[in-house]
Length: 597
Image: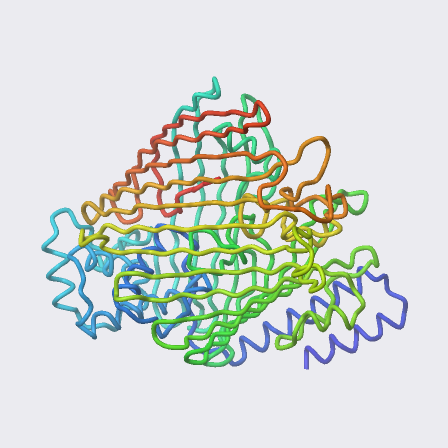
């Protein structure tokens, strides 16, 4: 009834000559109201999602690799994961009793379950897990309930409520460090304080919100990157005295399940497609954005629709400096061809209708249509991208994964003209090797990433593959090669060593010419149509080593020491920067800020 009334009002407004902006607002309100009412009226048991965190998600990957087959509750190439599904993975491992686990793996299982304890309350105690947990000196229990306490009734939460009507988890979050960078006279420091709240209402509506206030002084290489693209992973950031940065971080969404196999999520956050440290399709590199995500999970198939509203930072609109919008429509089909081999197919369309005074083009709301057809049907020049990914579990020790992104395909140039600028593609090939060389809890990862010149770019900033001046895929943009290696070693259940090594060769612009590395630029300003090669222009070589030792003092409370060595050099220019950075950090309930570029 409500939706019908709203629709009648909308038709009346159109006939009365209501301004286009107001009509668009009415359209959006009707759409979101319809989705909300539909979801609430018939939703089933709901779960929130685990925030993106490379350290945390590797623990899940490791268990899936050692199990030797994919989880039934989620498809690994589409992140984030539901908490309920991760607990279900640990349930499967405990029940099968055939997975060869180290003693530290049992502690990891207990840690993951403790983080999402609301989905474990009906479980009977597991003797084997309990035995291994208690046998580890210094292990941190995460599932034991402490009754008759207002705060920390569960070690994973500052405050929590769990009953038939509401499941609520409230946590304080903070990240603090001090350090030094040889390239600046200012002492490096950072402090962020905030709150994270998640929960479920009546077992039907899930919600999540996170907000933190942040100030600090980052290393020079981070400030140089921010000057070109924006503060990594953030939106608005203002500069303060003595090279300081001040910014507010916020994320939030609601989720519901109208049907058993369909989950709907709406809010501001990031998404990630792939199994690698990087993603050449969609990564968490940019700031959060408004999105509507629908996951349809049918056994071996998972189909994800993702519609977003993003910011075209290059243009402002209106006297109040309202930033112009850009939009995307994406879908990803993931198929488990077997319980060890997965493939995925991806399509995206980046578009803007601001010049016509319109908002989201409803033609792209069709969830099961080929977007390239819609683009041709509309006669638009929107930015179409096609991609594919795969993951293969080998011998309960190794995971091999890869991606391919195609941004342009003109047959007459692609195969017949050498170095055509229209050969716009990006690729990835990588592996994860757990318990490497028979050493328990030693995990290795290697990855090769490449993007040809002008990939992800378009004729105008409203349709390039960016959000708020930040690449949606790889932080280097395009026109580069990269080799990346990661060593992860859990020395004890709570003491971990991480080492990340990167070698990259990127072509940067010179003499005012566009050589294809800066994806914010109009590709019509390119230096030439043919003879384009990867890392063309001025080659800039970057060697990066980041070593971190992390001790978990209590549940999700980490004390960390970090040393970073980074060197930039170019044989053609005098560009040469050598960075030696160290820091000591204390963080709680928040992911480590990577800044690996």
